[in-house]
Structures are given as structure tokens and as C-alpha cells.
Length: 435
Image (cartoon, rainbow, N blue to C red; front, side, top):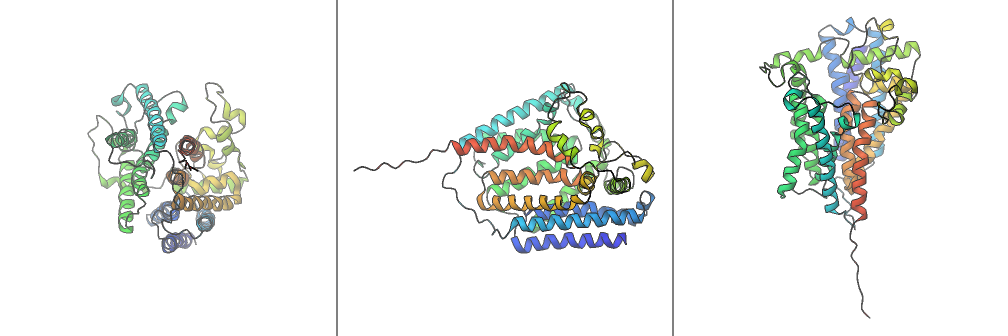
């Protein structure tokens, strides 16, 4: 029964992608990358685990069947919501604004935000003793005791999205080109030399998609598929060779190790998802929004001011794996969670709010469809906002809601402020009539 449900999920994902392409004729429609990522995690991965006979060493078929049923319902809601939000927007039916935003305000805002992000990133590198020390071990990165400084690297993405917006796109300018190169460098370094899949996908999507959106064009579907396969291959290659990628290593990397990405263990995304959903269901334990609320109300307060903030707020579980694994996991499943493991979108939503995870997926799908429609019709701020949601989909689907909330604030708030100022400082032409 489990394998049949997985194949049905795969057919549904493929059908949703093809239908979105047929209706909207846009390879950047959200369903293409949302269902594409879901198909990899919820279809391809469990099929690989079943084929090598390792899945049922960690979960039972009954546990897997229930989880896959919940996954299918959530993806159904996500897809329906996305279609409703998209409506019947025609391809590239851009409504020209009577008052275009101030290009100077957009570029200046991008440069200032990018400078702040770059300085904070340099501080984290200095916190490790320099670039060499920061990346002299596997999974290297910078560090700072202050979370605001660590997370300020996302301001580089804000700056890039502003510079790559249709209204500020200026590849003929040397300053613009240098800014794109300099602001992209830390993310490429984090992704490739740090062997991190999130930063790798984010920076590639930021540059690649924005380049087409700024020119009101789309790549051919064949190129889009090829790019997706190449990026997917690169991500798996980086993850499976992570221990050999750092400054000073002999870089003994190989594609032969890539099968280990689908090895059954407690940290495998699909197995961990089944474990979390099963534990929550059998123990009847759910957070009912407390974890997400903590991300909004508690996380912004520095730990230097409130050291025990999560404990005092009543969600100490957030200190490990975003709290998705409940206390009864080892009792119910017979194995314990691995620090750093991610349960993926459906499991995280389920642990948070049980069956309400299904309408939540529908609401999220509607949001993606609505913002996409506004982006293709109006551009401006909506293009930047759509790119932010696109980048966050990587964290939402592969990690958790907690991984999205604080990044959403960091990316959207400064971008919105710059766009608002750009709109306010437009010079309105005045027509003088003489009697």
C-alpha cells in the first residue's frame, strides 16, 4: 500500500506540473519548483529506500502509509491553493505603472543594504580567524556570538534582488556588474567551499531566475529542466563529499559516493518525517502554533538579553532540530533523533497543528500563486517579493517552518522599505498651462 501511495504522489506531482505549464505557460510558475522539490523528497527518496530494502529497518509499512497519505493530502491542498491564487493570469501581461519607481533609490538602497551585509559577513569570518581558518575544516563558515550579525548575510540576497529587479537591472554599468559579483561571492563561497546545499541553491536561483525576470523573459523548458538536474546533481555531490571539501584538504572527491545520500538512517529526511508524524500521532502531542509564535516574538530578542528565552516561553524543544522531534520519538520508533536532522515541510506542519496542516498548505499554495500573478502582471515590488518566496521554498520544503519565518522577515522587511521609498520619491511631472 505504501509503495502504491508513493507512485500516486509522484503521478500527482507530475500532473500538477504539466497542468500548470499548460494553463499558465510559465516555467517560473511556483508549482513547478514546489512540486518538483516535493517529488524528490516524498517520491524519489522513499522509492530509493524501498528499492535497496533499508526503509523498513526504521519504519513500519503502516507508519509509512499513514505518513504518505498525509503528504498526499497536503500536496493536494498546496496545489489547489496555488491554482486558486494564480487565477488566469496571462503570460507576461505586465501592467505598466504610470509612475515608475525611482531607480536611484533602488540602487542606492541595494548598495547600502549590501554593504551592511558584507561587513557583517566579514565580521563572522574574522570571528573564525580569517578566511583560511573559517574554511579549513569540513562544513566551514564564519561565526559571531550575535545572531543578528550571523544572519545579516541574507542582506546580501536582498541587495542582489533589488539590483536584479526589472526597474534597477543595468548590466551595462560597470559598478552594477561589480556589485553583483562582490555581493554574490560570500554566498558562492558558503555554498561551494562550505559544501552547503541551501546557500548553493539560493544563490543560483537568485542570479538565474532574476536575470530572466528582469528582462521579462523565460528560459526554454529544456534549459530549465537541465539546470534543475545540474543543480540537483551539484547539491548531492557537495553533501556526499562534504568531508573532503575545505581549504587544505586533498579534495579527494568522487561521484561514487553519491548513493550514500539515499542511505537509510535516523537523519534521512523521509525516515525522520515518518518518525515525527508517527510519534506526534501516537502521543497526541502538538504545538498548536507555539513554535511558530516563538519565532516571531522570542527569537528576535538576543540571547545576551534573555538567555533562557525558549525555556521561559515554554518551547525548550526548539533548541534542537526546531523541536520537530518530540520526547516520545525513541519510545515510539526505537531510535533517537540526530542533531541537525530536518523533518521537511509536511512533518513540521503536522507536528505543529495536526490535520490543520492540510488547510495551512492550501493557504501557502494560494499565497505563492497570488504573488506570482501580481509579479507577472505588475512587476516592481511584487517581483522581488516573489523571488523571496521562491528562495524560501527551499527551506520550507526541505527543513521546517521555523527555518522560513525569520528568513522571511530579514529578506522582506528591508526590501519593502527600499521599494516604498522608491515609490515615494518619484518625480511627478507637472503640466503648466498658460492662459
